[in-house]
Length: 114
Length: 109
Image 1 (cartoon, rainbow over the protein chains, first blue to last red):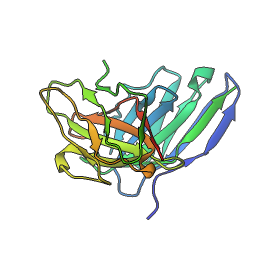
Image 2 (tube, rainbow over the protein chains, first blue to last red; image 1 turned 30 degrees about the horizontal axis):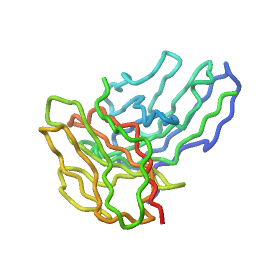
Image 3 (spheres, rainbow over the protein chains, first blue to last red; image 1 turned 180 degrees about the vertical axis):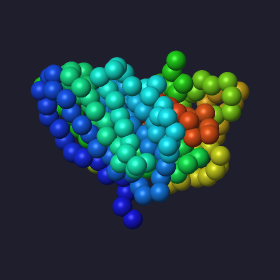
């Protein structure tokens, strides 16, 4: 079956513009995670969705970042008024409920803010 | 607070030599520990988890609660082991997942 997909694969935007990153999890996976991968910073947790529960937003770095998950499936990460320090690879992962350790990752979206 | 520490950003070993990638964690409960790997131009993927006590691609990792460590080991490194390795921890119950900063392993032919 299809794995986790993300779009776009690459995004170049000007400082100050808003961007939307999309994630399609594996069908049937109720848990969805967003991470940011920066050089030398490893993987930074951003937000976690589990089914219809309120998301865990504790990892979002500022109020310019938000995410939603519609219908318990597709998720969109939105970054408003992008800054150069937002440049990174944004990874999405999904897992079955209660199987947080076995996450399936998407290919990522490489965001470059100029 | 950093829950997962990988002290080595870069590690190089010769083919056939033993390799150990260090991971230390900070958590007072009973965490679950994992190793994830990302090969060049591939997606990040699960390598192994401590509760399985398994050996994957010749790699093993033992959870040492006394030393709060979960080092990844392989007795004889192969060129195809060259990759980025991340140690990770979850507090269980599908909660937040914490990754370390990663170690880039290069196996020299």
